[in-house]
Image (cartoon, rainbow, N blue to C red; front, side):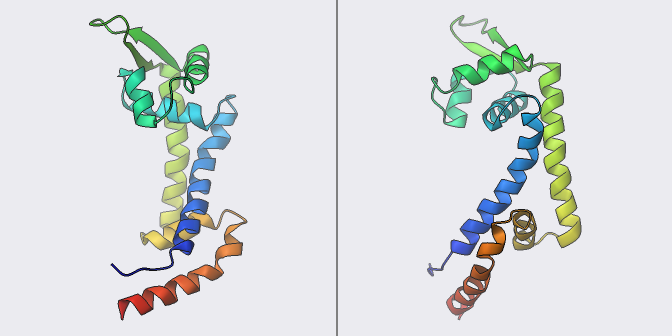
Length: 158
């Protein structure tokens, strides 16, 4: 495997991801919630009935780090918790109608942005990532690395 300088790719991904995730962050903040609440709610909505244990395992979060997040989602009426009929110690999580509505709103915002970018630049992955990254002011500072990356890539192909 040829080695290459992937600094540009790493930074490009960072800025693209920042744009993508900030789209939802702005919406969820209006509900008094954070990105962690979004991740929890997203998983619970996509896997209704997921156990707390499996949710934490999937998200790679400790039990200590989950208590306040789950409590706030319950208090806001976005999720509900039910004991398992087989084992009362096991808690299953389900989205409420309001929780599902919020996930759809968040997903729509991100999907709309992705579609708009694809309409502008097509389906080339680098073009998509660069368009997402262009929303971040810091991207201007690293654009020069693209030429270095392309030069390195051409040398490795020879």
